[in-house]
Image (cartoon, rainbow, N blue to C red):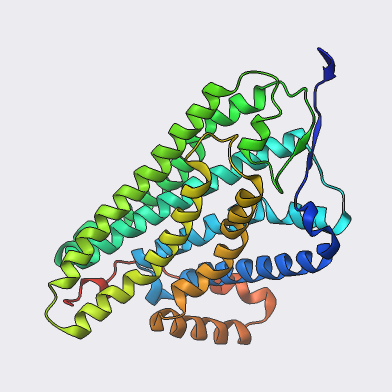
Length: 336
C-alpha cells in the first residue's frame, strides 16, 4: 500500500550486532549457553518452591514469581536473537515485532513490581516480625502477586496500541537485536514526540515509583538491623536481604541508564549491551544470587532432586498433585 514515496512496512530487519559478524557463531554459543543456564536456574527455583512444603512461604512464593517473569522476559527476546544469529537472516514480521515489544516491556514492569513486593515482604519480616503471620496471609500474597502481573501487562497497553497503530513508511531497519520502542519509533512517519514523553512518564512511574518504594523499605530495614543487639542477629537479618539488594542494584541501574530519557536518543551500541546484560546476563546470575547463600533452599533443592531422580518420568505429575498449598512463614516470625 502506497504512502507518499514509500510503502507500508510489513516486516522489520533487526540489525543486531554487525560488528561481531566475524565471531558470530562464537557469540551465538555464548548467548545460547547463558540462556540455557538462566532457563534451567529459574525453572529449578519454581520447581523446588512448588514441590518442597518447607518453602511454601511468602518469601519463596514471590521469588518464584520473579523467576517466572524472568523466564518470560528472556524467552520472548533471546530465542529470536539466537535464530537470527544462527541463520544470518534478521527479519521479523510486523505483528511479531509489536508483540515482542509489548511482552518484553510488560515483563520488565512485572519484574520491577515483583522486586517491590519482595522488599515489602522483607520489611514486614524484619521490622514487624510479630505481626508477620497476621499480615502476610495467603490471600494477601496471592493478591499482591496478581497485582504485579496485572499492572505489568496493563500499564504499557495504551502505549503499545498507539505504537502498533503508527504508520511505518520509512526504512525498516531497527538498530537493535529486538524490537525496542526507541529505534522502532524512529521508523514511524508521524510525529512521535508525544509518545516519547508518554514513554518517559511511563518509565518514571514504573521504575522510579517502584524504586522509591523499595528504597524506603530498605531504609527502614537497615535502621532496624542496626538496632539488633547481637552480631549473629544482624548477620542473619542482612543475609535475607543481600541477594535481593544485589538484583535490585543491577536491574534498576542498567534500566535507569537506558530508558529515563527520550526513547529515540542515546548511543544504540551502549543500549544494546546494557539490554543484553538485563535480558541474558542477569537472568543467568539471579538464580545463583538468590540461592547460593541460602542453606534452606539448597537443602530443599537436594531433597527435590533426590526425589525426582527416583521417580519414573510418567509418575512426575502424580507427585506434583500431592504438594500442599502455600502456608505462612514460621521462620520469618522468629525473634532475630
